[in-house]
Image 1: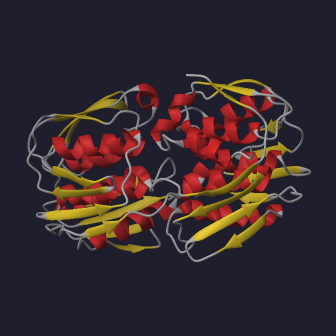
Image 2 (image 1 turned 120 degrees about the vertical axis):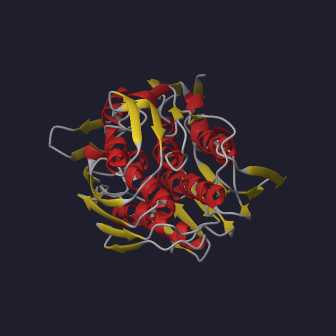
Length: 415
C-alpha cells in the first residue's frame, strides 16, 4: 500500500498505543502464572497479536472483557506444537525458551524479514541448558524440546537483549538454579523491563548491573493485574513530529518509565526543541533546531525518530550506535541513508558505529518503507517539512506497532 503525505503543520494531542515490549512480556508472564491475570490498556498491533497466538497455543485461556482489557488464565498445556510469531523478533526470542519448558517437540515459525534475523545466540544457549534444538542455520524455523535444566551459562548480549529476555522469563521454571553471565550487554533498560515484569508476577531475578544474573529454579509465577504503559517508541516519533512541524502533546506517558526510549527527551533538549514535561504527558513544539550528539546504543529504536529531528536541525548531528541496526526489520541504518537521500537529506555512515545527518530542506518524492514500520513513520514525519508530496511505498507495515499511525497523523494536521 502506498501512502502520500503532503507537507503541512500539525497541532494537537494524541495518546500513543501501549508499549508492545511490555505487552509481550506481560502476556508471556500471564501464560506462566497458574490462575487468572488481568492486563489493562492493551492494544492489538501485529506483534501483540503474535504473542497472543503463542500463549493460546501454549495453553492460556484468553478473554477480552472490553476494548483494551484481557483476562488470561495461565498454565503450560500446549494445544498444538507450532508457534507462529509472524515478524515479531521479540516473540521469536521470548517464546522459544518458553516452548523449551514443554517436554515435547515444539516448532517456532516466522515470516517475512524475521526469517533473516539471527537466532543462534539463543539456540546455542538453550542447548547448553539441556534443550534439544534444531534450527535453520541459526535462523527460524526452530524446533526445541525440553526440559530446560538450568545451570551456569555465558551468552553474548551484544546483538540483542531479546535473547536474554527470553531466557530470564523461562529460567525461573527450570529444574535447577541458573547463573547467567551476559557479555557486552546492550539495551539494559529492556532487561530492566523484563526483571520488573517478572517481579510483578512474583518471580525474583537477581542481577549485578544486568551483566550477571542469578535465577532460582522451581519458582512459580503468580497471577497479577498489570496496566500496560504507553509506548515511548511511538511517543518518540510523535514528539519528533511536534518538534519539527508544529506542536504535539503526547498523553498517557510516564517520564519515570523503564522504557529505553524515554531517552528521546535528552535528544529533544539537546536539539533546542520546545519541551513541556508534565507528570503524565509531554509536549514538543517547533523551535529553531540545532545539531546534536546522541548515543543510541541502548535505545536503537530511536534512530528513525532522531533522523526526523536531525534532518530539521542546523548543522550535522552525530548519532552513535548504528551497529545495533543491522538486524532489524531491514538494515535500518542503510535504509535511512538511502531513503532520506531521496528526499535531499545527506546521511553519512562511513565512520564505524556513527551516523552523521546534515540538516536541510526536504524535497518531495517517492520513497520505500523497506517493510519497516519505523522507517515508514520516520519518512512520513519528515514529509511534513517537504517542498512537495512524499509517497511512501509499503506503508502498511506500520501495523506491526502502530496500526492507526497515518489516521492519527491526519488528525494532527492543521487544516
